[in-house]
Length: 606
Image (tube, rainbow, N blue to C red; front, top):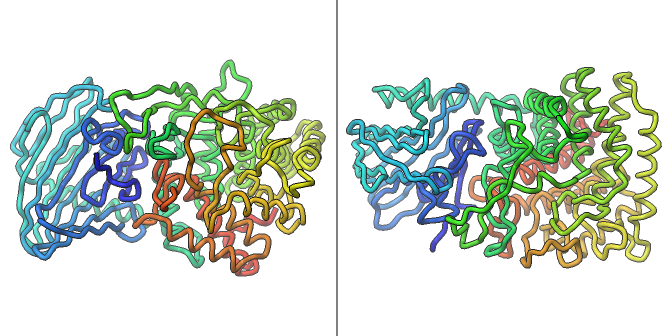
């Protein structure tokens, strides 16, 4: 079967869910109405059974172009042919929580263009049957197990084999609209569809432009930083304040491989890194929403002595993993997984990322409350007694627990930042924290340093370094110019860097996880590498690597999790990790080049 490459898609969203719209005019992925709802369109994972929503001009030959309206998440797809030029405007309204709509406006720019519409929903991950009901010449209802979706258009629609189809022609400067929505919408599409869509489009454009206008970033790479910040905003739930890792599930890390995970959830780690990036851009309101969500998670712990590593957007901790046998997977990469059993893992590093983001929010956002501090205090007390044990690590390798260097580093960060918050706010704290923090510090130098290899290793006795070690100077554990760090950086370059791209570890030498497949380079690690180079004084090299990496984005400036051998995008798409890494690297490069004279919030002032 012929799948569209992952990088051929743009995204639209409404802060509740995200749809992927391809260069070919087809929406091939949508979980509706929430990020973690079952899919309605998933042709990206199975061409026959996944479902899609396409609008195509009937040109014999054409070129396509896709772009965002500047500083918005409103997506334009253009079809260019000697016979005419057509355009689709795709967006999802924002600003009204009751709106759950996907809107498409089709416009002919030049000539006279004939189009074909096909809307083929496949409910509940393609497992549930549905009934299509024609309720008017321009309106069709899709019913499936308690969920009813309306497709309303400005042109006549027909039902064919349970799907909606239409063929129509538009002359130059003519347009028509389609609204795909949940039937119980309080703001349902009215009779005058064109007026409603125009008003909603302008409101949505203004919302996004207003949001981008709040950014304090004025550096060299404003366009790419703004696009990455817009991605991070789309991954945020306006209802709950949680932040998901990616809007897709089961896109493979290796074509034909089995590392196909569901990332439509909130990892404490990923979301905390996202908060760091948002604060650096001045978005303290979004950071505050996430802090409120974390505070609720701490308060709602029942029968558990510690935070989970990940949750659903509404805070559910049970994310049972299962496979969809009816989907063949992207390019036959199976199994197709929904849910994520990693929720049961022990990942001690989450405390470090969380406390670092709390520390920054308390400093640059708003002071945290006493009650929130007491909840965090319980978690840090637990950590101070439990840090010295193997865990599953940042990469969630499913091959058994190890004493990972990064987990130790993050535990040190957690205790260090907790002490700094207590000092800044005069909060009472456990006197044992400093002793345990210093034990971890000494352990890293004693147990993880390999004198022969002149590097900090992935775990004691390991034969390989790990790209997560790049966070050692970024977390201010070690000076970026310390001889031990520079020799570790050199070892990382020798083992894990290929040109400007960075592998996260060498699977054959790391903890085995039972999957026989070779993954791509991990894009976030490349941006960490850029920061390490800039902080060590290698500014020209850092900028060179950074700007080469910018060339691996897709046509819209979007990144997946990994890059394959030929630069193809792999893993779930788009990935918060990659975009927050880009923001942090750009921010740091600007600071270094400006000799720390940037007037934005200076996150280096620890």
